[in-house]
Length: 292
Length: 292
Image (cartoon, rainbow over all chains, first blue to last red; front, side):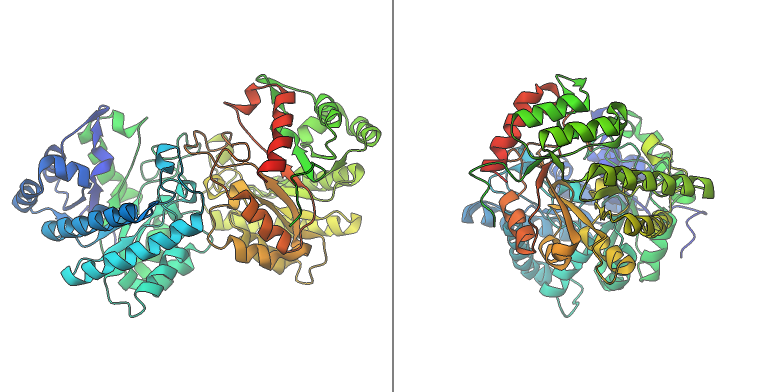
């Protein structure tokens, strides 16, 4: 297992972690500068932030700073109630893949989607099996374009508490079953993003990480699970402040062959998003060295 | 699949559903009377309510009304940081089993516990594997007494969002693996309580319900998953108000051989606990007939 205590060369910042500073939205170029000032070598940006800044401008800024990507957030949200909706999702995922290619990302992270409308509190159907079928078909279709351009897709299993509204792939086993179905030859263009927040509780976590292996482990995300957790979406903790066994899980991931970045992704409306970006990034660096 | 549309003979009320009425705690004897007035044939009471009323008094009241139990809430919470704590949990589970026997319950529901201290926001250790081992040992020890007195133990897998603080058994598969380990002969004294709130999201739900079969399916709980869910514990929905496919899941449970009660267990600090008990129970009856 790599020793992170001496530096932060394998730290990446998911820009959601500092997208709000002192409670206010911060533009992506400011976040990139803050990372560059601290010698952070990688980020994972969100498409809405990229669009607001302009993708070419972001590409130039990253090149100037020597900052790479550990992933691109995000594709997915495949289910829909009609053919037009399903096609719109495919078109959007195609664009996400092309954007990721332009930025040199190692993968597009897929938050696959769930019951259409549920995110707005009005599920248009309740059949989660149907949603899972539409996710399967959507990934299969997107994989064709991913293979053409050489951009891996990383299915991110989301915590079961987000099964209704954000992603109906909810365990690593389920994600890997889908990988094996759609990419039995393990061709390198389909794998998983393992976020400890979503999977730490899973009694089959270790065996499924082993099963994934280096070919399927495309991204590794860290934060922590707080007790109590006050919100289902945006009450994640900084590494070390919760109950996740971070070193143990990274040990499993590295034993399976993963050698990429450890990406910090913290949604924290009540705590970290209320602080300065500098303080948050400094905490990420310190905790990366001491806790991850 | 049994037709529930014509009546509510298979409805049971978990008394947590109406333990607060108009926002105020209500004594258990009042709840029992409210159920009796509506022809409800079964309840599942909580130990703290039973202790406050007096168990002999409750037994007499239930007999007078002809009301039975669909379960007894609850045993479990096995993990602890030292031998004294582990023993205290075993002693408490022994008492729960004896109380359930006195009341004629069909099973004791086990909320098995998780990281000691986490429920108070201060986990005393983080090793969920250790907690799972302590749960295994605690159930094994309790099973001896359960067999002596003939009181089945029903392991309730809790939603993964409660893995840190309430129960580290989080899928039906995990619960059944433990049943098979501790009770390979399927002797009838160890099984599961299936609560749709905790398991509805599980991609392996149908196959694990089939695997459980009638011998292992000791209790069936219903409510609904709301979108959005505003609290991890006490924002459950009334059946029909959320996204759970209630009839589909009951179909699976009955196909596996379950013929017991459908027990309504709703923790709802913001909505149902603010209403009158009469209104809540009437809604339970109506939704039992139309939605479950």
